[in-house]
Image 1 (cartoon, rainbow, N blue to C red):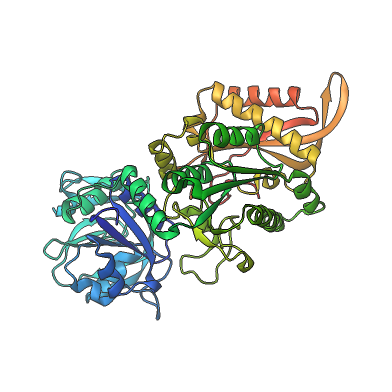
Image 2: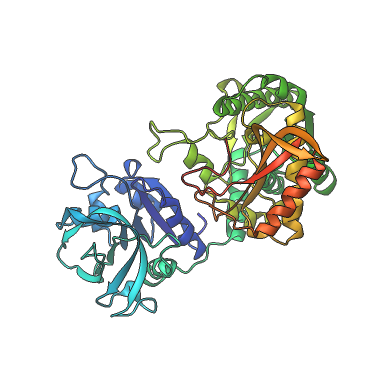
Length: 518
């Protein structure tokens, strides 16, 4: 284990459960998220958390067969914090009552702090009015014994409740989101002040743990790492090289859909800088041929994924004797590809490295980053001494530029997009904005428009620019460029990329959109 300071989050299906984990980890406390239907008292005892947090969720405790925490949890002398639905199920399970309310609250609200409690120490003062973020219809109506009201809002007379003696607390609002300005401080009070966590979880500790865990998993076996050139697979490869040395071989399949000069940079980093054994396979012509006449984005992802696996298998067989495959799978990849319950769900988009390998490959997976968010991976990369050029690189999707060209893929389109994308990123770097932006890229639209260039009529393609801010990729807002910047970038793209005569900027947040276009 990384630390004795561990927090367990029981997930009831909230869209922002992972943000709870982020806030806890930001205060240097290790935590894990477990779905409610895969948790019982034995798992809790084995995990030995210092505290448990119950997440929000879409269900109503007033309905039958809705999620509950294990009843035994409340007899373990462990601090518990219930958030939104988590508060409501805790109240119901401890003998209180929840009711449906005519006065629902969604979005910004204000809490009147009515009493003191340990959760508020040095954060909220009695009598103060504090901004929070609400998202609820039901509300607590009757408190269980031993609880007191410590905060009220217009729509929630029990917006914050506390039982300091048993160390049970409940919020109707969401402290984990940025729209609750002091929410992170409240969570820190819970983990550090009430639960007694010391905050000793660091990337150095994670690095050491994963090195030992990987060595224990692999033994004297051989590992092949599928290298995409992005931050995730790069960090995985360097971490595994530290753990396993020459037991590791990296395979880089060039799909022909990477950014400008990116393939050359990847090969240079691994062969010249780290001296890690690297197999480089240029399969760009094959991928383009496979995608001929394919327009559906999900089919593109599946074809690219399947083709990648086929080529990867060929190269792995040439290396010979590998028992393990290493991947740079991250937490958000898993969350977007499967439901929190692990059951039937709407797939937002398939991630190329989620779901394992064909059984015919008979390899076990090594995924040391599976519980991390992107910024945590970057922190680990810095801990490993990776160049900032690679660590700070914007996220790049596994299918590459193929999902930034809605409609049919051709080499001509890929070359156009590569040039436009490089200009956009260069302008962002020149303006000193690259590190302020989570992800920025160009999209080549399946649209042609009339233009005038040199007194002549043109009928060329439209390029869309996309730039977003985010902390983890789960939610995102468009970056508010000054119009002068956008004008300059558009002018360069139109002048320097023959075949594009119009540029637009995407101002859609996530949700309702995704970050990528396909």
